[in-house]
Each structure stands twice: as structure tokens, then as C-alpha cells.
Amino acid sequence: MAHESVFTLEATPVKFGPGASADAGWELKRLGVRRAMLVTDPRVGGLDAVQRIRRAIEAEGIRLVVYDRAHVEPTVDSVQDAAEFAREHEPDGFISIGGGSSMDTAKVANLIVSHPAPVMAYVNPPIGDGRRPPTPLKPHLAIPTTSGSGSEATTVAVLDIPDLQVKTGISHRYLRTSQAIVDPELTRTCPPEVIASAGLDVVCHAAESFLSKRYDTRPAPERPDDRPPYQGSNPIADVWSAKALEYGGRHLRRAVEDPDDLEARGAMMLAATMAGIGFGSAGVHIPHAIAYPVAGLRHEYEAPGYDSDHPFVPHGHSVIVSAPAAFRFTHEAMPERHHHVAELLTGERLPDAGPDTLPAVLRDLMRDLGAPTGIAAFGYAEDDVPAIVQGALKQQRLLVIAPREPGEQDLHHIVTASMRNW
Image (cartoon, rainbow, N blue to C red; front, side):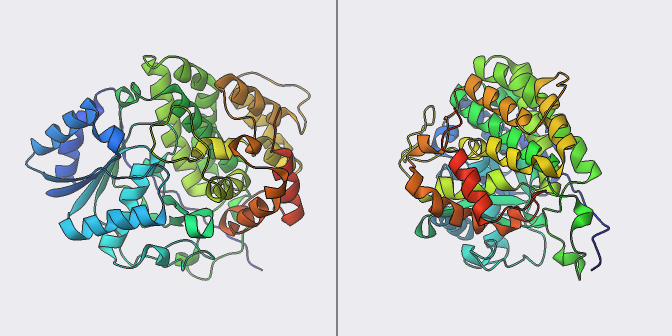
């Protein structure tokens, strides 16, 4: 069997710096947009900073239609609603302002209005049909207000499907945004709990990407279009992921402690974007595969610090709780790289590292940030483990790039060990 010999890496153009969001109108005009659909959520949409961005856009002669109903942790119905709004108002471009939920909502709305079909037609198989858009989408300018998802730089939109009790996603290179503006000043009003969860998502993105199966161990595709967005670790993705890990270890605690520490919050925004570029090429695996059923099976957890009208598990928390056990499992496949990740996060040499070194580093970070202690904190019991395992098994596009691919019993062990991390 021939193995892959090619990897690809595409990166969203990024404009970074305090006050950079004032350039939003100029960037949309440069992209040829004259009527833009602004996607945000009710809380973010009411911020003074967003009103300033709107005025900057309108000053360039660009008309705006505002969709401020983006659902925190989007569902298939909420993104379908945004798509219907887009079809009604016929924008020629999109701007998303907010966290990953707003950016992902805009991505899906753009996809559906560009190539009309039900949302489930594009959802990754085996849950959806996995249809591929035939041509690029309309221009999309993304302006994150948190420092976690990296959605401004990725090819993925994540959504919850309550009827199936699972989270999944849509993944294609055409979902990547046309331009990102990363402005640290927009995180000043972000609660510490949100910064903590988002930052832990950054750490997981970067670690899973760096610790994924090498791209050249996969079978070669029959056609270029068959090459998956998540290709496995490669030399260029490694550079972005490693730097994101370094920034996360150095700045995340500070970013949570002080909303006015723009150096730390800006560094975490950069880390989110860098991790997005890294995992957008290499991919994520076991912690994210487990996170989707953890977030999708139960909807009763009241997330501290989040202004939401419905219970949900923040994505960063749903991912980090299984990371220590997951990396304990994958350690034997690439021990030197696990050791390197631990040293990047601590910023110091760690002699005599072993299988428990990286898990211990992650648990220390979780405790310092006040993260949930494990899956049980979200309302799950030991009886729920089989359902979580079955939900994770549906995420084969993620599991196949784990450096040590887990079977059902392996996942059962990882989930059980993750019920309580301390």
C-alpha cells in the first residue's frame, strides 16, 4: 500500500494588535463586500466595542444586516436558522464577531447560502452525508473576542445535534475564513472562566496536533480531493503547535488572573490562532473525540462565568478533562514528543520524564485555573461511560490520526480514568 508523501498547509491572513478591529470596514471593502451579514451572539452584540466596529464598517459604505442570535455551542437547528436568515437577506459577504460559536455559525451560514442544501448534508460522516462544496464560499472576515477556538484560522465548524445526542462538525478547506482580525482589546470584558476554558482548548488543540500520527503514515489518496483536512503531524504544523504550547504555558494563568493584562491576553489570542493553523493541518484526536459526546449527551451543567440561557459544557472544559488519561494512553507511541510538550508547557527541562509527566503537567494547569475535576463534574456517572464511548467511536475522522489508535476498550479505560482527575 502506497503511503502519503504530500502534506498541505493553508493559513488565513491575520491582522493582529490592540485596536486592529478598527480596520474591519477597510478589510471588508478590500474583499469586495458591499452588503455584509454580521454574525454575533446577544451578549457580544451589545458591547460598545462591537458598536464601534459596526460604525467603522458603515463608514466604508458597506451595508450591514445583523444576525445576533448565534447560539453558544451551536446546534444543527441554530445554524440552520442563521442560514435561512442569510438566504433571506442575500449578503455578498460575512463578518463574525465573538467566540468560536459565532464564527462557526457564520461559516455554516456562508456554506448553505453559497451552496444550498440541508446542514446535515455537509456534516461529517458517518453522522451526516459529508457533501463537499464544489467552489469557494463568499468572503468571511472573522474577529474573535475570546482566545480559544482558533476558528478564525481553521477549516472546521462544530455543532451539536441534540436528537442524536452528539456533537460533530463540518470540515472542508472552503470553510476557512478569508481574513482574521485579532484584537487583544476585545477580550477585556471576557470573564476569567471563559478565558480559562478557551485557553485550555488552545492547549489541547496544540498538544493533540503535535502528538498526532505523522502525515506520511496514512494511505495515499486516490485523488487530491480525497486528502483529509486533518492530515497528521507535519513539519510546518509542528512549528505553529509548539509555539502555541509555549505561549499557553507562559501566559494562560496570567490571562485568567487579570483582564487588563493585554500582553497575556493578546498572547493567548495569538496562541489560539497559531494552534488553529497547526491543528487545521494536523488535526485533533482522542480528547476532542471524547469531548463531543460529553458535551452532547447531557445538557444540565451550568457553566460558571457564561452568560447563557441554556445549560451546556464549555468546549475547552469538555476537552481538557480527558486529556491527561488520553496522553497517558498515547505516550508509548511517541514518548519523546510527549516529553517535549510537557517541557513547552512548563518552560523548563523535565529530566526523567515518563508516561505520567505530561498528564501531571496538565492536571496542575487545570487545578490552577479552577477547571472541572473530571467528566463526573458535568453530571455523568459510571453508568454513562458506555454511551460516552459509543459517541466517541463515531468520531472516526479524529481517532484515526491518534498516534496510538484506540479501540472500544481503550476508550472505556480513558473515559473511566477521566471521571475524576483528582
